[in-house]
Length: 167
Image (cartoon, rainbow, N blue to C red; front, side):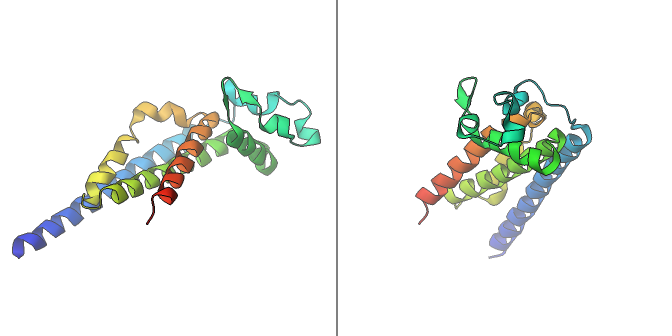
């Protein structure tokens, strides 16, 4: 009996430590991003407004919203760019920070899916995998506003999977 109590305490301690590490890594990334975010769009980010020169005075059209960027449609990113233009004259730094919050939602969903797929696995083990996604190797992606389409695709994919396979 004493071993079971000790095992539960240890697992809870590991969970608290891993979650604290995950939250710390996320906050460090967020602070670095907010400190070095610049209000200057990069190459592909100009695509949000370049395809319709009359967009800002005439408003959005379906053709503008469904325009292909390179080889794919980024409807939600284009719409997000328009919303940020209306809110704050398209402050790219603010949109980068918003995209990082989308990434945080994605991390939470990944942990939720991991816990649902393997309920017997300890929470700290599932959360430890999400810690790898906060590696500095992918940090460049958080500096691109246009990357929000990847976050939206993954978030809606995971939500659809959770809705499809919920009991």
